[in-house]
Amino acid sequence: DDCMAWSGQRPVTWLLDHVDVDKRWCLVHATHMTPSETARLASSGAVAGLCPTTEANLGDGLFDAVRFLEAGGVFGVGSDSQISISPIEELRWLEYGMRLRTRSRNVLAGEPTRHTGQRLLEGALSGGARACGRPIGAIAVGRRADFVVLADDHPRLYGRRGESLADSLVFSGNESVVREVYVGGRRVISQGRHPMEERIALDFRRALDALNR
Image (cartoon, rainbow, N blue to C red; front, side):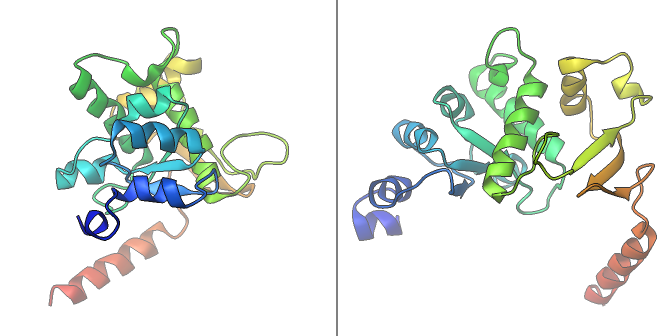
């Protein structure tokens, strides 16, 4: 309302009309956009930084992911309010929000033969890398060696290969199936645990105890 009173335009419309928004930009949330703004943002190359669990927690609305992706838009996900800090849950809610809106399944799969989980993971990795402005998001020459190793002996992943494995990862629950995490080629999580996990948990508990006194 303040932007309308000041400029006579909606915030995203004003931004796109007056600033050279391109792939260097990341617009966080981007929930309350008109169809025209959604299409224009997609064509600009800017990343939509989406936080579906936060929008759900606040009752703030649904990002029009269908229109945005159909227009070639690029997205990433973030936890924002830290109600949840699971990137997998963010992707699941992104798809489920569109299912509730359209009353159909596999809304964001794109092509009929594609798996929704795979498309969501690939999209978030690519968009997240662009938003960060860093050579990450893929295992490839010239990219930073940031990656996770999944526990293929976990019941959630039994018998899953290729794109169906991504579906299980995104849609079959919240229990972690990450066995190892590498950052810059260095292993920082082993057997699902951080070497300083107990110390971090203890410090966190002490901080909460101090706040609650």
